[in-house]
Image 1 (cartoon, rainbow, N blue to C red):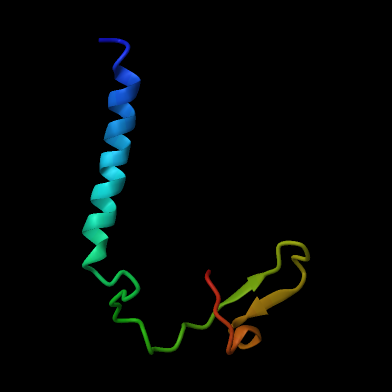
Image 2 (image 1 turned 120 degrees about the vertical axis):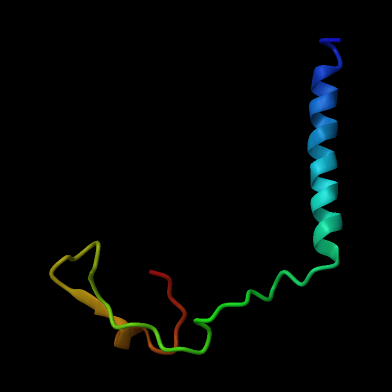
Length: 68
């Protein structure tokens, strides 16, 4: 029985991977509904990590995607 445990573990991982592929094949995973899409981001001002005396704000990132 100990000889089959690695095989059973591998088959379980492959089975879960296959189930995930099957489950997502019928769903559009690129669309994420959010009430925040299309609304302006709030104002923010943060210090730079490498130069804490300088700050970065929303106006410096206009037109570019960012994640805070």
